[in-house]
Image (cartoon, rainbow, N blue to C red; front, side, top):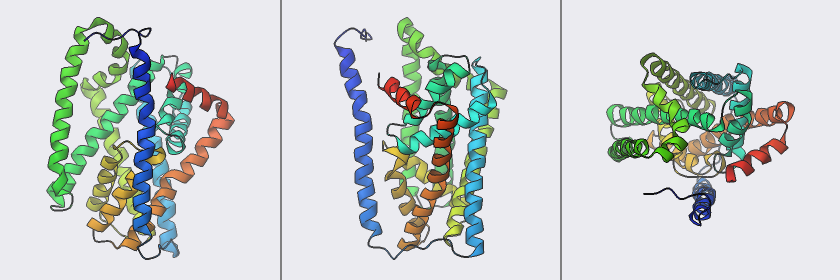
Length: 329
């Protein structure tokens, strides 16, 4: 099938469809969040950390989330350097934080657009190359999380989540097959290949043994630390989990987060938390407490720090608006 020229009438229609995605995500979030809030009002009142042990667990959760962010920045730096870019480690750290801030407060994962807009000139590379590294990040995360969810939800926890893992496995196999067919089409079409090759380069680079294994190991480490975040947050509200249960909660919430949603996966991730806590034997009040405290841990500190870094180092709201405008174009 021929690719429409940007000057042809089909191009604006494509842009219109893309512009519908943020609206769809916000709609999904609003409906999901409304359902979660309605459900939460029928549960017992939430409790918050009050004992020294619970407060220590909360501080530990925030520290672990900071550590996971550092490892994510290290992974991104390796992906960028493998593509011939020359990023500074400090930029990778700060832009990772800013990207998460943007994803927490803006729709359509606009934080990723901010990362692309700010990272490309500082790393002496193209925006398409930066986008390609973000695609590789996502694919690494999805691969680890799907395996984790199937292994923990079905193989270890048995009935918990077992009804849905078969469907997820089928979807994963279908997605891999579709990607393989799509790549064969792209390679045969010189124009499409020229446009998409920079986007696929970082992902295809994962096939190189040592490089791919190192990045896979970093990804596993990231999600192991994330599991610690979720376990520590649970301990802060009196909902103790063992590592297997913590991994299940992380994987379940991450699968729910793949559903299009608004900023910070509002609604979808909350529904996953409520589902997971109830499945693991927690009460409704515990689920609400955990949901609120988890939101605080993974949203508030990194969003505040990201805003400070954006203003102090990268030109503030002006650049944020420019990134959003570029993402829409």
